[in-house]
Image (cartoon, rainbow, N blue to C red):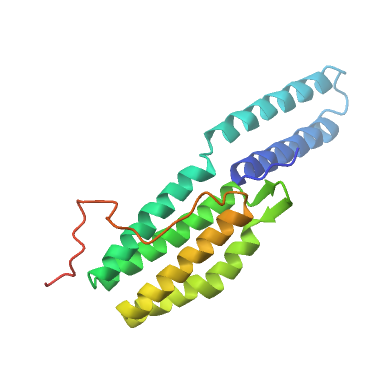
Length: 188
């Protein structure tokens, strides 16, 4: 069975590895064994399949990871607004990392138009729009940052539309996600 999440892939890889190990042991180590070895292997395979299903149930939904992206991307805006470039870099890195996590959860989205390879979309997004945003953070250029940030939001909206979710439109935030973080740069 093919699945699209890394957790499922890992569980399937473990299942295959254990199955091969069981078969190798049964073939080489128990050459004179009775016919009761085969049902044990089938029971173990059934148990592994059940464990695989249990593990798949532990993987969070893609929307969970994307909520983290929204949180970090919102705070990125306010860190840059305050000129706190180390904090902006932190939130940029976190947002980018969580986008990658979301794609590991669902690397290919099935839509009414066919399959959408999110890894390919992210690769283009990362090398263009996120690279431009990273450049403005490194340059500590608020004006350039605002342009690049809006461009990245446009890329987000494009991915959402390609994924049959055009109703997920993101925009420049009006308030920060968190009140406990001080966005003022150190020493000011």
